[in-house]
Image (cartoon, rainbow, N blue to C red; front, side):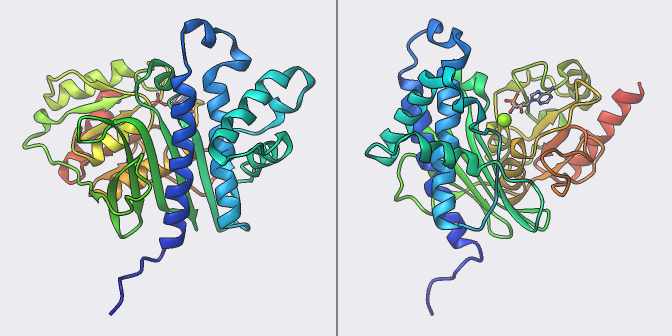
Length: 334
Ligand code: AMP
Ligand code: MG
């Protein structure tokens, strides 16, 4: 008998390689982040450079491994093509060159970025957030390279490369990898030889009052007054754990938190698929549950946004999830 072969092994291998390459690009740009003044200039901010360069290296690798697969990325190269974007374009090409080796030249780099311009329809596509949590990136805190593969509206592979997530050995850099039906594993982000890592599993609090909850640092991204009321209803007295990016899903998958609340701050906001695809599978395959704030499953068949959903609730699952959903209803009606 040979080794068991997973259904998505090829996708997983290519995805791990792509996310690790992108994480190295982001880390290299972050290491050159010298002071607030480099951030002030919007068009050449390090986060802009890293965002484009990260999308370029992920798409380059996915295009090579799966030439027929569409990629729905957050960015496109339009902004880089203008005559006044020379400086930014050169900085992006340099950041990509440091990872791919040699001098790829601007044209291929722009075409890799634009490979991520596909439409979110059809039976199978990847979705990419090249840097999720840009504010966290700039603060030297949590951010993630988030890559998901969607087939027939289901997320089947979810990868979160988290350069600043504790690695369990006193350092930072963890890669969360989930495959539908096969569990979530946490791997060493900076060690390309680590293909198995160890399983991630949610933790069940002894009572709802003991649940830790996490939410966005940015009050514009999730209604923090609302979540404080929900926490109070559940009897939770601990302060929320506020971190940027889909590292919140990773925290739930690892049992560092057992509730992630993302409550709409505006009626018209629709969550982006690349902000949730990978994280949702990472939590579910670690034993948890993810729905929107009304308890409906996240619907990845609606294009670039979760047009049918409002907000997101991720928990360690079991009765806790329903308790959180009913607390949301009570606060809403209250
Ligand atoms: P977080 O780091 O969890 O605060 O989420 C970062 C993500 O929030 C970004 O990638 C944006 O796509 C997304 N975002 C931007 N505006 C909003 C909003 N009004 N509500 C929810 N999410 C938002
Ligand atoms: Mg994002």
